[in-house]
Length: 404
Image (cartoon, rainbow, N blue to C red; front, side):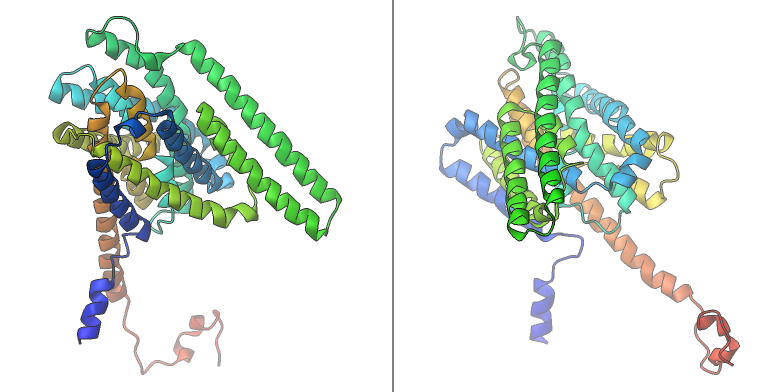
């Protein structure tokens, strides 16, 4: 009896993945480290931003690597709508909510910071059996390609929010404005082209010399080296669009297992970084409102707008997409970037990330509980078998043919 009670204590709910429990632990560890050690110099350093960017790059690559390409082609219109109309509408809903509650121009940049779906979180938690492969591919593509749109919004709306807040001049985050954005697109294209050329050349060489064990091992090592170099360069230069697109093409069995581990590790490291951020100060109430607004905006867009562009999506998949808002290292990275021009952004975005992920976890637990409740009910609706009836009375039970 005691043993069974101990087993029940150790058993975790099936709706709570192990990685989520690990994320909660690393979040607490990050807060403790940030309280015990002055990490302000680290958080403000270029190395911290590079590390956060590297985590984002790993998440983007892992997210698009897992996309079902056939499902992506089938719902390409829906993906384009999600990363354009969806991001704009979500940012407007979130910013509007924050403006109504707090009446501060900074609400515009706060809405941008959490409007996207974090690809690292989606990649780490993407094995949700309550979502079809079609819906999962749609969500991962949405999470992977809404970041460039978020960056574009940041460049233009940050300047307006900065002026509306009474600051002279232009914010640092705007950089060269539209020119800087176009230059970034060019660098992304150059990195993607270089990676694809090297990837294609390696595969051609291997195809010519078939069956050579040492050559195949060399190809595997070169593939891993190519991906690692791409992730490092992308993190150093903020070339995330190239990484997301490469994940659709540069695929190999040698990468799969290592990439799963890398995504899980990056997910945990992201929450450690978030803990360090929270230790510097927390605006709990604004962060809570921001998180609830972000979660609600996703539901509005997924349930009200996406059905106009994605046809024949099952009701369960629509609900899963509506509850699909997740925030993580992307929001943290944007908050750190905006902090220089809008002090207090990080203190608000930090608890907003926690709020969004708590709401996501609760919603997934409720969905799992609802599914478990429906299964017994469905079983009870089946007619009970009459033991007096033999298989001869129901020939369809054996391949549709009578056994007589």
